[in-house]
Length: 307
Image (tube, rainbow, N blue to C red; front, side):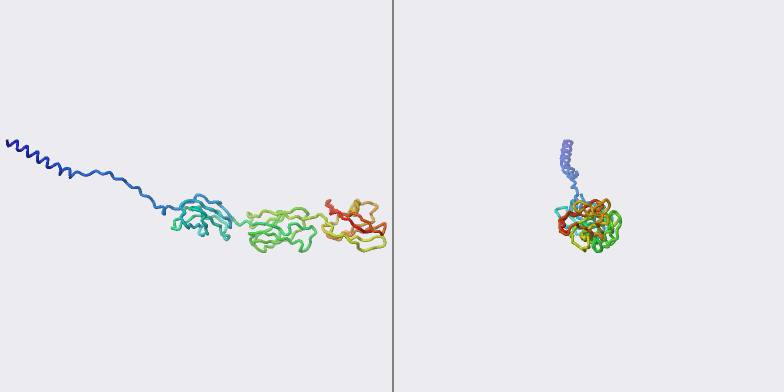
């Protein structure tokens, strides 16, 4: 009987101890890690394209990328350049005209001060531009100030040199857009004019035409003698070996008709010839006259009414 009571007491004590043990057991929970994200403002702007990647002062450059934000600024080395926002994440700027040639680190800064990676950007020396020659055509017999020529353009440096047919020609730089020079004694035809700021920066060449074709502007009767008179032929581009054709008959030069040997052609300069004509009658008649130079270039044919 005592033994049975003792067993019952043990069972009750064991039952009472179960909740206490359960309360002391640790709870197992699953912990989920939350990934840490970098705030968007802390991500540096990224440059994806620079077009063009090299240029000369005054050129327009476009930069595209991501994370530019609002009001980004562009730097070429230590120089901040004025930018213009074209659209989101795209800006444009003009290389300052005062920027010296060289290699620069180009990068972008957002308004919060965060900068992009830097890229190499080459600024070329300013290339001169030759736009026109005044005049672009000149007579081979032009003299004095008539041989002065003005080269018009832009970006001429104060040490710019003018090249005529590949050789340096003395010239005067008046401004960044004007150079003057004197046409040297050259043969007729087309000649090449070019401006160089440095050995590596040359303009596109322009053609200068030196005209040698003779041209008659006026024919007048001059001094009269016993059996001949002088016919004065005015014009330009006459040469010392010029001849005249009178109704197809050559006067002057070698090979003229022996019947007309007494008639002479006298060269008085690039703009004047004198034809000593021996008429067989004092009555005016019409005849055709043309000046032909040694190279075969001929003037227009004109009709003259004279004895």
